[in-house]
Length: 478
Ligand code: ATP
Ligand code: MG
Ligand code: MG
Ligand code: MG
Image 1 (cartoon, protein in one colour):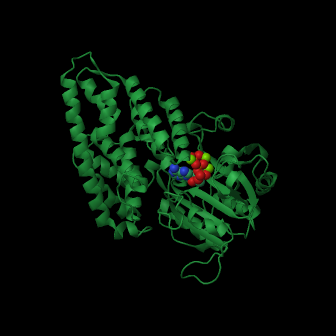
Image 2 (spheres, protein in one colour):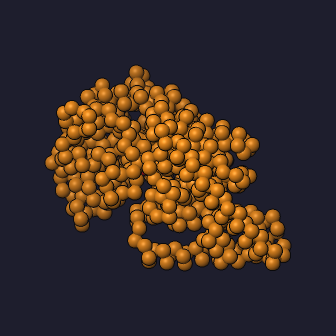
Image 3 (cartoon, rainbow, N blue to C red):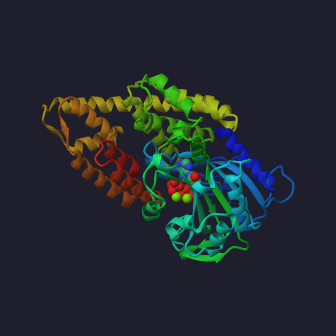
């Protein structure tokens, strides 16, 4: 089943259940200064969970049931891109929402119907597993009633099954509540881990989280006080690319129909073939090309702060990977065109704003490539004073990163060509010092920081001592 068909089916299914279908909102929050980006389907709809009458421009009457496919940005997942099979920085989240209308019973019944009915997705019910909040007997009972065997339902605490995450008392203010998640078992060929392993470690390659049903019934106030909302709500989020990957039976979303044209273009531009999971570069470039194009098309600009800094980071990360594949000229702007071709039918702004987006990307690439080149010249200078067997100091390696945006993995690679080692421990130390300074100076998005660290510990575990690690860590906390 093609991605477009899944998207369409989801929206039509919920229309058939009385929902108003709205187009995606911009990824740039319109009335929420606390947020850098829209990060879920519910974010632009928050006021309606709090009791604001759900009326929408150009639509008659109040709509207490809404369905969308929302472009969502998760900067905390940047480091995951290219490494996990399931994280994008910009992704499409399908959702159905109830503003004080239906609650758990319908949300669970409909989710089950949509996933398993052959008329809709027709997934094998035997492969579906669910989680519920530890105290949520009601959700548990509804799952049993629709036919999920109790042994495939697991209870987790607030760190997993309360949304937005963290203990009910700790998360951000606003609507929140227990949630219930649906996982798909891709089978032993995708990993020998069992559901019990997932239950233990909460990490899996075999079991993929596809859908989160959130039951916002509280308004979280300062000090973690949970005040019941006037009426309980429903907020769900399903990752479109994850479902496509499951239905298309492919290893990861890079092999789905919407990513293939991008990967093909990268192969064409670099002459380097795509070797599936091992080709981190192709994956990062394709994902970030999509992300940058989406974000710029919604009106963001490259800059050194906030939103603009996020797109800059995404672009630079992709350009570096392109550099590693031998690209010395701007190329990302060419990929923006492929993004607009593939996705422009659903998101017309991609086509409407393409020219301006390409111009911005190209300029930014040219500038960054110059910086990269001067970094390389500087490194050449440093290396010319060293002999094979010598070690480049960690401080120098860090300055290359800090001043020239020059990633450690490139430094390592070039130094290695001359038989020179790099003091990566010293690099880490210099990095930590700089981070400590940054920590003290800027009180910025703590949650993002925490997420990056979690992602990094996971990476460190998976990838041990790969050369990419230092570079990733640098980026994660830059
Ligand atoms: P994960 O645990 O895999 O990071 P999550 O629990 O952070 O996912 P939710 O906040 O529950 O995700 O978002 C709802 C759904 O959106 C998820 O079930 C998943 O299908 C999808 N999703 C979340 N993050 C991403 C991402 N970075 N890229 C693609 N899809 C995502
Ligand atoms: Mg996540
Ligand atoms: Mg999760
Ligand atoms: Mg989740």
